[in-house]
Image 1 (cartoon, rainbow, N blue to C red):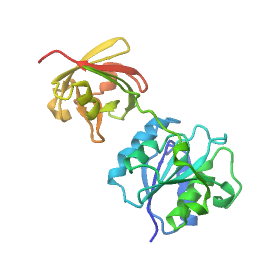
Image 2 (spheres, rainbow, N blue to C red):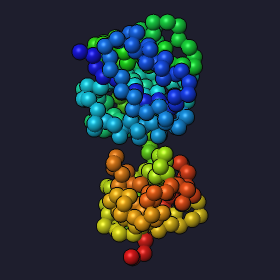
Image 3 (cartoon, one colour):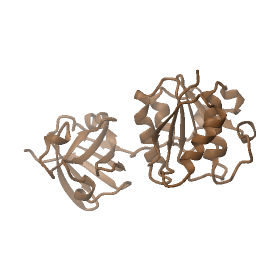
Image 4 (tube, helix red, strand yellow):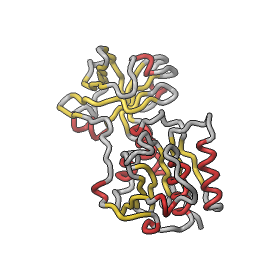
Length: 271
């Protein structure tokens, strides 16, 4: 039985790139099932790709091969890697795009640096390693290859890490960043329920968000419908992150924030 391949990229769907990677996998591992997680990661946004990939881990087949290609360093000296974590294997450029997924899987057990001569059945382009290195590697792993077939071993401590949100937690406040904005305009902050607890904000009914010189009051809710139409609020989203949301409107437009903006979340006034 072939291992399923979970595929994430920033390629979009306007060009042929995703389809070509599918074609490569179909050619090298005809029995492989490919699950497209998303190809809508913002271009070259490694952090957004890492967050999306990690969000899928609890719901994915235990033996999945994760193929994650958000690769602004393609063609440079950055490494291509395959990493074993639990029963899963992750294939990606070594730029942090799989760092959160590795944490969600319990940590890396073994890693190799991909050797293009071992994995690519054709000459390797300097600009499309997804086609020439990563997709063939995922296909080989799906079909039963071992990590030792792909390249030389790496110390797992050498793998690139990723600081998501870089939260600074203090009594009564959290300083972090906007790590993502979805198509509905919901803002995901680089903080979770544990950060709220450590800041003493877990039980707060009202929070205040400050960013770009603006302050917005957010009512704590559990779902969008708990807010009045057009009212901003804060909740823990389906992946465990603090999110700034708005009922039937774009919170991003309302609060005037963008991905990467630094924000402070603090105790707000009482209702």
